[in-house]
Image (cartoon, rainbow, N blue to C red; front, side):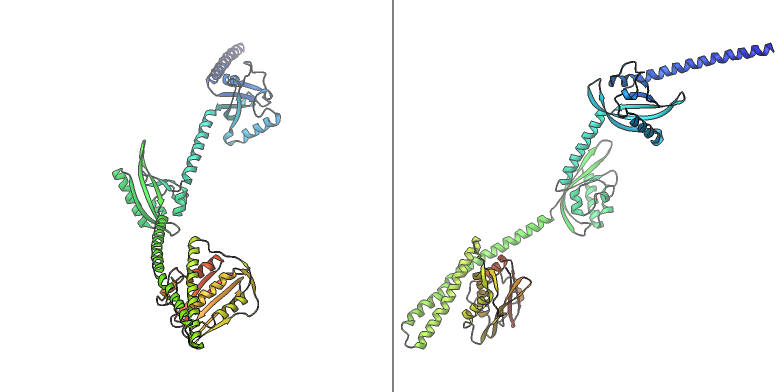
Length: 509
């Protein structure tokens, strides 16, 4: 029995010795761990579940300006964001609910050691220590990193804003990955109707609807890689919207370290330039033709003016020598007719000068459409050729509008005179109707008609459909200018041998 007690006592002494060695080892490990944490450039602290500061490394103590003996601090004394009971409890819940039990967040802090503000990236974890939960916080100063990232983001935003607003198509391809697109500008999206997300990471064969276009792009890309010389070419392709685009493209290779070079391209849409060039050529041809017609017009004016003027002078002399009333009436009619022709010529020339100077005047005032048509009928009813009847076709009631009376009379006069020149039998009918807030005027005849190819130019200046008929070739172009200026329009319907109808519209006020 005594022997057994001695053995138990020895065993007990051995266990006590081992326990002391174990405690000594733990203390040694804890000291080594604390020493290691004091050497790191990050801030480390530990807080108990009741808010006591259990540990703070030297870096944490220094940057926050704490006493070296930090054991008396609680969370309510620390310069942290959760130094109230409610905020502290919320932080505990956040850590416990975080994925993997580790909560990572960033926060602003005041570095008392350097007297400046900064940003910490903190990782928080709850560990059990001597039977209670302990929260460990590891903070890394990321102030400079955040500044650098913000500068980089700002630079990227600035670069993207510039690239997206440059009015040319920009693109980048990876020559080491089957020429897949790495960048696709907004201007390229607008022109090609291909979205950026559809283009990036894909080849020309994936995104362009016409394979022949993709084949052309690939041949150019391969030629650029083979020669390593800047490639400039004009190319045409079918956009995703079905429109054919013509662009001037420049492609270059940009060397890259440890990877294949990038292909950078710039395309300028020159389709509009071609259209503008065509329009300019057309305008130049039209201007040259107008100048030629004007020259011909001015050259013929001496003849056009001299003919009625000679008639007026000659028959005015004969009028005094007439032997009978019948002879005097005949001479008087000839003088009257030629006077009207001469007046019309002068009016057209004066209107042409005003048109060229942009000073053709329009004066609006109350006027009666029925009165205008009646006066036109009285002026022209005896002037058509024998066998031609002038017919006034109007509602017959007074109709007051506010417009330029003289210009509307000029419209009817020019159109009726034009009809009389080309109508040898039948009738000339003129008038107006009302509808859709517009005056719908018309002058129709049963004359020779106008050929379809001539109808296209009938409203142009200096155009005469029959060079043997007196006139300046300005009447119809002046009619078009009057209706356009008033906010209306003028059209014609004609058939060879059956006659012509001119229709014009004028807004009612």
